[in-house]
Length: 177
Image 1 (cartoon, rainbow, N blue to C red):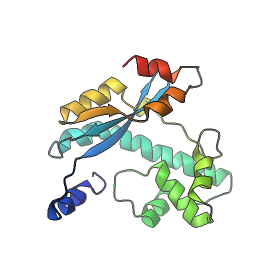
Image 2: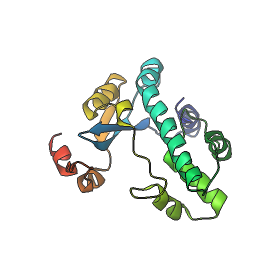
Image 3: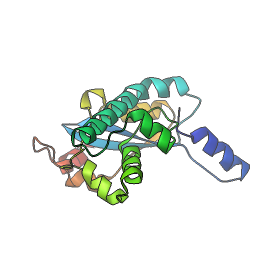
Image 4: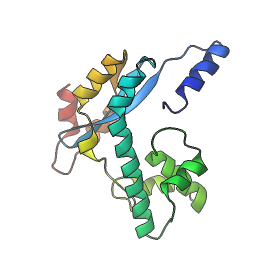
């Protein structure tokens, strides 16, 4: 469920390496995506983790399907989500845009950076987050706290540069927290 985290923690214990659990959750605030990191959460709270993250995983898979549809429509790639899962050896509950980028680069011979441009804002295969699946930043922080973790805002510098289609300023979002 946690994309290799239990295996990582077991290996770290075996080799006496200090570790900490971590997760990045995408949320939405006034039309802007806000990424929040959760550190030190309790893996034993698996039921709550699955309950809160299942909609997030579902959104990620729908977004992956939409990205692959855009590639198919542009006649640049004809892969299914299962093709990506198998080739990239995805064990977790969803396929991320980074997984599709890795697959596309491998299949096309393009560099990862070239493929990244295709899926960035304005790119031919860009798909926005499906916001009705996402929690608010406050909900994400409460969730992370409920599973014993500490929440940290990810990429604050990137957020401060962003402006959504309605003109919401990322700096205003940062100031509100």
